Image: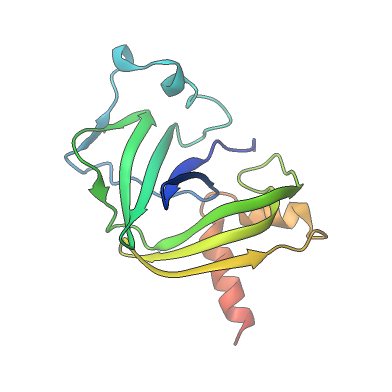
Length: 161
């Protein structure tokens, strides 16, 4: 798997790459397929091995609530941003220098990660994790494949028992 183009998270007015995959509510009335005639170069970038989901979204946290602001690629968002009440997940923002580059998913390891826990669209916890520069990059890459973040979180929770 190729390293993936991250979604963008706007937090405190700053744009950050988001190293996790958040789902779209594709049945929402404000979300529809983007007609080919409307696609520009940025939309076409979403059709490569670097973007298996075929879209890139811009999310924003305002007043402790997560919003979907924009989508480019296969899907489009019309109208105002949507409160992301369907999202219960952990958002991962890489911080600092890249310690290990992994050409797979969101597997690269950075000095730190900001992890933001969201439940039904509401931020419930924010923590910063210091990463070990000696981490096994293959293990890290597997943890950051789409969908694996939930399994990784479950394994961490089980270790605490």
